[in-house]
Every structure is written in structure tokens, then in C-alpha cells.
Image 1 (cartoon, rainbow, N blue to C red):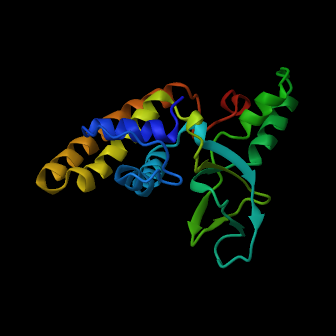
Image 2 (cartoon, rainbow, N blue to C red):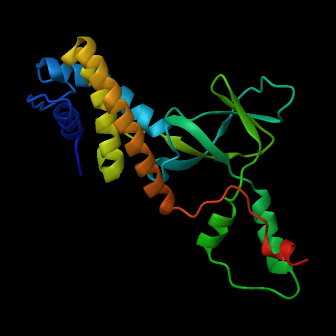
Length: 220
């Protein structure tokens, strides 16, 4: 898989630069490495925030903090690497499953993996204020998009997306003037197109749904 330097060199090649950087942390001393060190983290985070990538999601039990709200029942600190909440997992679905297993005419075997999947359909209501997540869910577990710095986790299309996005940032300071602005806009469009391809590829590998109605309820 591509390293950070590989992505930077790919971005530089997009805009026609012959320079090859060997490191941006710390920069290897070249002007181009200095620009990459400045703009690569911005491009990476922007790309991560553009979609709920399946490989960048994780879950954590939240820590309760002082509740500033008179509307919401509970307040929790967001994880330091959280780029965006996806859902607050609902304990109610566990209750649904237990009711399903107790239903008189159906008692199929349910694995632990299926039980975990069941609890992740849908989300408890929540909102975020000043880095605090507010919800009515007790002992909340958050599924969220995290800041990924390990490039080996990136898909091929996501890697290309970041390289085009980085190229759009590098074009201005390296090419300069009106040609630099035009090149930047061109690679911004290329990045948007690649983002759609990467997001579609990612979505095809996921069967997540935002809502779920248990079978035992639908059959009644």
C-alpha cells in the first residue's frame, strides 16, 4: 500500500513536478516536502470527513461528563480522534432481540456476531455541542469516524482521492499565479470525481442500514 511519501509524490506528479520527496515528517529539506508537510494533513482529514468510510469507523463506550443541557438526559465527552459521530448504539435493540427469541412460534439460533449486528441498526437521538455529545441513551456507545493516519488502511480509490485533493492544494504555491489557480481547480474537480468513485466502492462493501424493524414485529 502507498506510504505518506508515495501519496505526496503522486500528488506532485499530478501537477507536473519532477521532485521526489523522501519524508515530510520531518520534511526532507526540499521546498516541495515543506508544502506537503503543510497540506497533506489537511487533505487527509478533508477526505476522511467527506464520507463515513467503513474502514475508518470504530466504537467506544463514552465517558459521562457534566451535563450542560436541560433537554438531554446524559452528556458524554467525544473521543479525541473523532472526526464525526455515526450513531449512538441503542440498547433497545437487545430488548427487541430477547423479545424475538421469546416469541412463541420462532426461536432460531442467534450467534454473538448477529447479536452485535442487531444492536447497531439505527441510532439513539443525539446532538453535539462544543465537543460534548448529548443524548437520552444511558451507558452510551458511540460508532464514529476516526482520524486515520495509517495509510495501509486506505483503499486504492481513497488513496487516489487524497492525492488529487493534495494536488489541488499544492498547485497554488508550486505553480503560482493564474496557471496555479486553474490547475488547483482542475484537480479539485478530479478529487470530487474520485471521491464519488471511492465512496460508491466503499458503500458496495457495506450492508448497513439506518433503520431496522424486527421480524417478529413485522409478522404481527
